[in-house]
Amino acid sequence: MTKYIFVTGGVTSSLGKGIFAASLAKLLQGHGFTVTIQKFDPYLNIDPGTLNPYEHGECYVTEDGAETDLDLGHYERFLNIHTSQANNVTTGRVYQTVLDRERKGDFLGKTVQVIPHITDEIKSRFEAINQLTKYDFIITELGGTVGDIESLPFIEAVRQFIWDKGKENAIVCHLTLVPYLAAAKELKTKPTQHSVKMLSESGIQPDIIICRTEKPIPSEVRKKIALFCNVSLDAVIQGIDKDTIYDVPLEMQKEGIDKVVLKKLKMKSKQEPNLQKWKKFLTKLKNPNKEVHIALVGKYIELQDAYKSIYESFIHAGAACSTKVVVKAIHSNNLTKANAAEILKGFDGVLVAPGFGDRAIDGKIEAIRFIRENNIPFLGICLGMQMAVIEYARNVAGLADAHSTEMNKKVKHAVIDIMHSQKSVKAMGGTMRLGAYECAIEEKTLAHKLYKSKKISERHRHRYEFNNDYLDILRSHGLITSGINTENNLVEIIELKDHPFFIGAQYHPELKSTPENPHPLFVGLIEAAVKYKK
Image 1 (cartoon, rainbow, N blue to C red):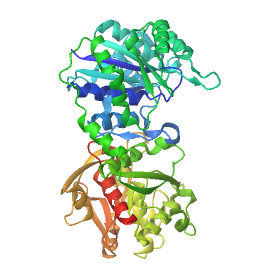
Image 2 (cartoon, rainbow, N blue to C red):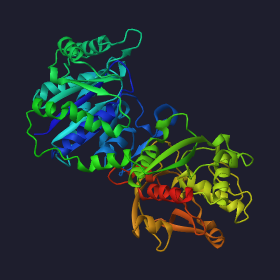
Image 3 (tube, helix red, strand yellow):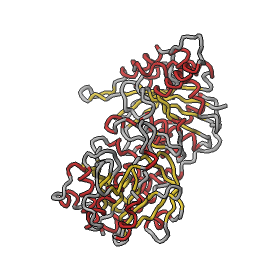
Image 4 (cartoon, rainbow, N blue to C red):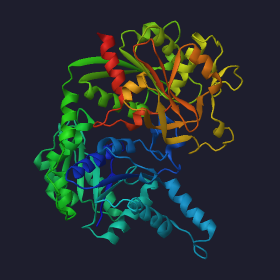
């Protein structure tokens, strides 16, 4: 029988519920169990696809084209598996389903209410992910903080679900903050006590408490938390800050949380925990023998989570190359033709990031011009690739006013244009070219050298594409289109021959990079940066 683990948070947001859930899943996976994780978010948006990156961080796209919360990126990177639409549920999606059923007459004669109709829909989605693949464990992370008005239906659904399944089949892990007061020189447990009390008032007694802290928690403090929060002593787990999130699974293993979970759910390990690949990755990550500096040129650099998968991909690639990768974010709005050389000097490679809209576009174009003219290793992703095409069209192919119709609807040379299939689309949410598409790679190209394959599959999220009306003229001036989606004849990869490393991808390679399988485009950029530095 499938076992269910619910992860809740208290005191404050951003405690790291997603990292904890992914770390616990990694440990259970190491014991030989099949595990998946899902995220339930309390906001009313149907999905994060229309949310501003400044407000919600990056929108993570799955293989099946779902626009999801960035925590699904952590799940995939830690477990080395693919997630799907079923792994991310929002209040908006739950209410939409219930209201659609009401309009169809499914509840004819009944008053539709939060209890039981909304909570029943939430409970059904706790299990829905188990329909195609039967998992040993399903971990469900509840977004938000206990006590939030938006979270109440989810908490009630969890209470009912545990009552239905029994405590031997469903447990709750509660993350709280144990702050250190420097003036008093002590850790304070009262926020944790209040958080657990609030959860208990909703009818849920946590089985395990994970205490997020900056300082080690002494035994007497653990006993105090166990006593006043009504949990066993071994169920008070220290979640101390680490240098890297990839340390957390091993830290949780030291705390014995996997054994506590298995005991509470009456499960026996299938094997000795196998984390050898993970440990090998960490060893390489922490013992680099080289160092490179990479500029990340983007529009949303103020919030690191806006480019979360890109930063993580650099970590994976750096470990694979035994290289410390120092990434510095540069706002493209600050770049001009006059200062590009001054700002970008000293970097061993540059990544121009994805994005939407016309804000700060000129800075990206000027950065790419400087990179191309000075033979600095370059990787452009999505909008970054499109800006590389525009820069090349303007400064090499002689199309001085080349641009994208996303930024200028009346431009004469629209080298980037909206996809034909997108021209009649009015709704913004969930209507872009989303998810995994195949790409054929031309042999004897940089892309073929990196991928070592003639056919790949990568994830997309965009409306605008390379305009094939300009394919011949740009090719005649030396632009190589090394990757093509043969189904729609769309350009997926561009590169330059007489350059140490210059490649742009219409898709998002960062979405498929993991510690155990670093993405070849990021590995290639780091290898090229090492050579450039020498």
